[in-house]
Image (tube, rainbow, N blue to C red; front, side, top):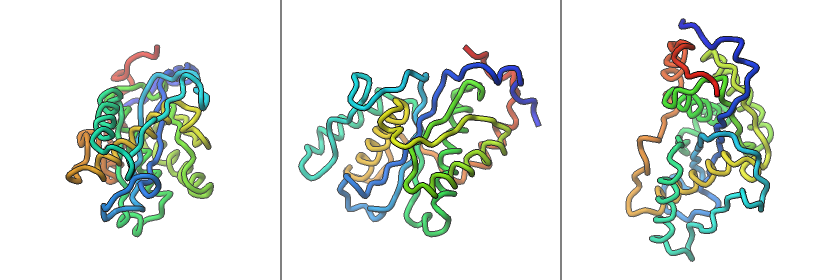
Length: 230
């Protein structure tokens, strides 16, 4: 196993935040997709950690548009594509109805969140000591607590000590989570309302079975591979 992060870095600030949220397409997006309404997209967005934004403040970001029977689909799709191009630092994964029938939801969501976190660390060459993870509270308090336990377990298997917390209403008070929420909404809308069912930004789509591979890649990194903390 490669040498991991120097312990004397543990006390330093964590300037990067990974915001994570889930999008259930059974609420506001009308679709004939066979996975509707129980498929779930879990999305993560990476950004420098700003001060928290309050709902309704100038720093709060609302969609201001929506997919639906009364919307101009072409214009809405263009808005969604523009948004994804403007905020490209995201990853997402898909939990299908079929998969939900084989494993508990807490396990599936924990794997999704862990995979997204590991992928950001690897592809952006982030020092783990500079990163924290915030997720919007998952549906159901029991689900959220179980998933939180599993997320910490998965990250520890990768020899990581990342702060990961679930917060109710984070999609309204944490900018990174709000952006993850909007990005997930855009991806869902483009996928389910387009002329075909191809996934947008496929290079940003992850698979739930990637957890073991990404864990090994993290374990093989040496702390000298990481940039210094700012």
